Length: 337
Image 1 (cartoon, helix red, strand yellow):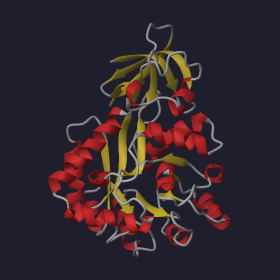
Image 2 (image 1 turned 60 degrees about the vertical axis):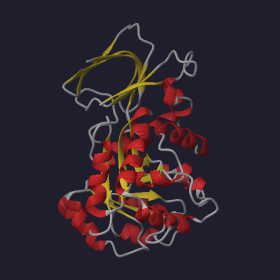
Image 3 (image 1 turned 30 degrees about the vertical axis):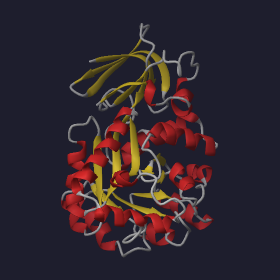
Image 4 (image 1 turned 30 degrees about the horizontal axis):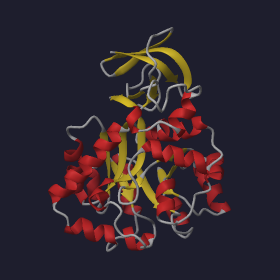
């Protein structure tokens, strides 16, 4: 397979005119030369934090606090999940996964409720779609027998030390929510030596120091934090300390579009567009051990191809800024995976 256009090459997303040569799902060459295509070829996105089970309850719970919405075991979300039919849950997750695929996402990391059956339900939901759903199971650590990783709710909710050790023994990633409402659960979360933290809206200076010392990546979810009124993470401070990835969080509160998430992150922080795109691609891929997120020889060929002649993108002079700030679902020609 050959994909031609303006290719955002390598970790720096250098725009070059040419073609990506793909053989058996792997990028074998990037050839820089004149081509007829005006398409923009981008690494496919990796949505580093989702809760797609919430797809059955979009925009439910207006006026509720974050705890009232999603805190286990009896937040609104959990009551609705318990009451839902399994087929309804799978259909809702399928719709959200299809939207992600159609907006350029190749993989997503889902904190999956429902134990082993929840993991199975997610895999059923994505079975016929060109997207990979990685299930980060919750609850009993035995879920790691089938899940791709462990996704803890928060250190204030339970003792996750056994789950952390089980993830380490299984050689699977362990992520945990932390610092979303306040700073109280950040130290206990960091004590677990997680592979990544999600949110980190309220870190204090000593938490920032610990994050840097421990080298813990952070998954930011800016639209969700705005929607639930918990505040905005100190994005620039975190960027100085560690790797940032990007996720869309609960489908209950936000659509799972990485285009919208990138545009929001760019508007809230003093980040170069390349840093935002890096958070939406290779940073999330590396959290889950995926060999994608970068267009370079030897990498998996997971690409999003945009129509550079669309009314939205025609005339663009800086394709990286355009992908981050301007591109949307209608501009996607296809996702190669």
